[in-house]
Image (cartoon, rainbow, N blue to C red; front, side):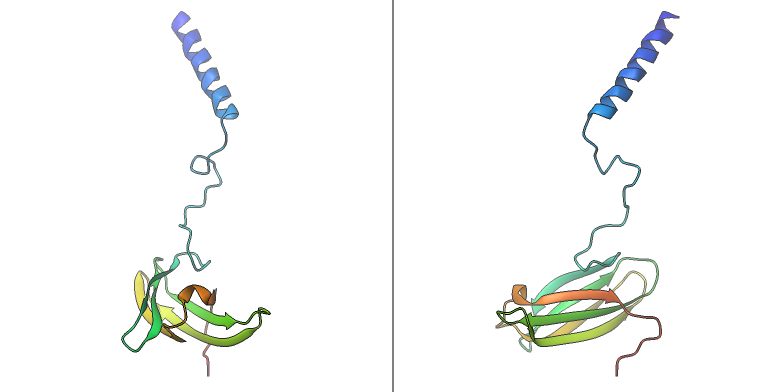
Length: 129
């Protein structure tokens, strides 16, 4: 009987301690299991930014999901008033668990960090002309 009381008190202490400790996302019930991405799209990742042999910026876009992905990308340069002065847009269809290399129209003389970027899901059946 005394052993059961000790277990009960230990259990109450642990519950109280869990309530008093700051919440951790890894322990909460609303944890999102999808990894964070640098594109804002679930399971789509921008990787390996580099200057290619022609002197233009290129990068890999990776689909870490088990389904096809059709993604549009936009890169643009802004002036001092935050108005777009040059842009590059495209789209790519990625098979499940695949990677594709894309090339931009921007020269490597321009630092990649000066380019603004946006990624979004392309509508199904959408084709750019």
